[in-house]
Length: 152
Image 1 (tube, helix red, strand yellow):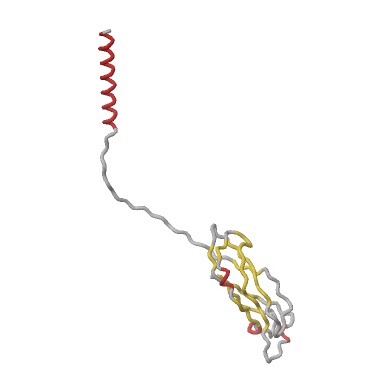
Image 2: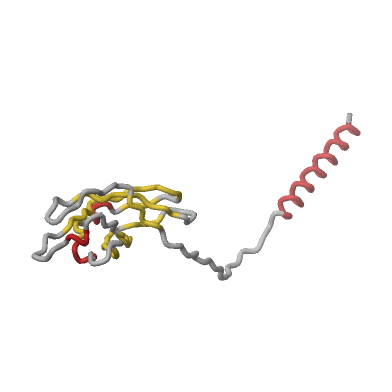
């Protein structure tokens, strides 16, 4: 029995020694340091403003007709659009001037994030009308207007 106790004491001492050594293996030094890193931003491509409303039958002094549409956004993520404006840039008819027409209204209330994609989002709030001038406007009969849109 004594021999067994001696062996047991030796084993216990060995276990305690190993534990002490293993705890010592987890000791560490503390320190502080500094460093730098970097990040970069990308860029975006312009979006296309599309008119989806159909306008026809304009005549001098006629009521304004609503303009509305959507966007083509080829960027990887959404684009913020605060406003859309329009201007008649040509009429396709000799003697008929873009000044014979007016685009008015304000779609600024439609501030939005336009998602990536074709025919996405929407805009409205603009209208087009033919002005009634004191001059003969017969040259504007059957004219096809080109309206150029700008988003901001």
